[in-house]
Length: 261
Image (cartoon, rainbow, N blue to C red):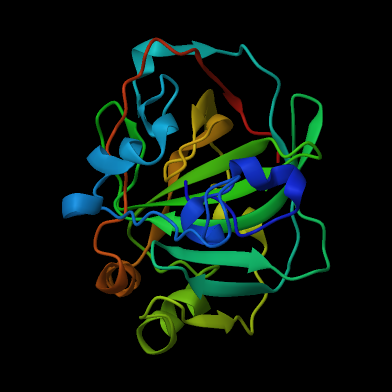
């Protein structure tokens, strides 16, 4: 999960150095540490400047069916509607942020988490019983205290994805370089990004990019969505690989329930 764009001070400790251009608490004049997915900036080096990246509750993980406890948490419910989104190539992923208007949120364990943004990774960061998917989309939410909750959706190659159609169409000409930004003409209902019927596995983990802050509530939709090979190729042309490797499981509780739509 790439952390959200610069937000109010209350949430600053959870935000990514790469997106906000400084680590939480850093002096404004200090350049942000460079990180990426290859060579000297690769994930194996992140802990050198972001110590949390070597923590015990890191993400992503491999979700093994044998470790999942069934029916042990309250259902996740979503109140999503159509909204307009601004999309930026931030140098690590394509990130879509909703424009002011419709409140999109989820309710989790009795708390409301508002949608901040969604972004994509290829290939998938999480795995299920060792299986990797073509793409993983993260819907990033925060509650009033700044605690983060992420809904992760897998995508496999199949039929074109209509909900993300315009975004994929505009990647080659308008989102190919870091810093490129657009406003989508069409509106997106985040619910259309989710599978119709799916079980959701929940666990406590971290951001999947520096600063790798822990305490993130992950909600993984097990049923994959689809996108076309052409759509996947458009994304891979810009980001052929922006997925953090699997992190140690460390015997964390995994629980699943049907999602309440």
